[in-house]
Length: 257
Image (cartoon, rainbow, N blue to C red; front, side, top):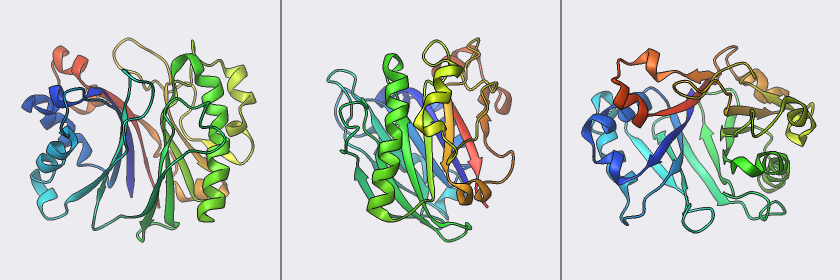
């Protein structure tokens, strides 16, 4: 089962209504069983994600194997609110439960995770928890450390240790040094960072490793196909103009056994 997390810069009506941009987004999303979109914004009202889902399910084989969608409420400070949005192939994945985190770390994390519990019978873990992340760059260290509290809350709530944390961590300089990263509670022995520090996940001339996938426990680590976790380099995968590159996005992907 292939999972992806993408940061589509300021995704809202403006991009969804542009056919050339929308078609690229849909082509990429269609490669995955589960897609998390972060930094979804819209200030005009309505719901561009419903329109994106409609077009997604009209693309190629998606007509026979359609996607479902689950969207969080707007999260974060007024004027800079964003949504976490999940797209998932309904024949492969079922969302059993979802909740908006509101525990001890609520005051620390700018955009509290919208956590989901998935039933994925074609994988070795059968049930999988996804915790989405988009940190505030100036608070990266504190927010990433607080994710340990989110994990503990999830483990207690659902009695499930099959946990994957994914999204835009801002986990590189200038927001987080390697020394500070090593002190994070989610850098302890139970956690496994699948995207190495030398992997470039940003676009264009930015050489940082902002986007990450972290799994909890040995069972989850063993459930990941070796070397499948990587940055998605859409500039290499697709032939795009410079304008399309600027409009597009970045992300990380991984495959579960």
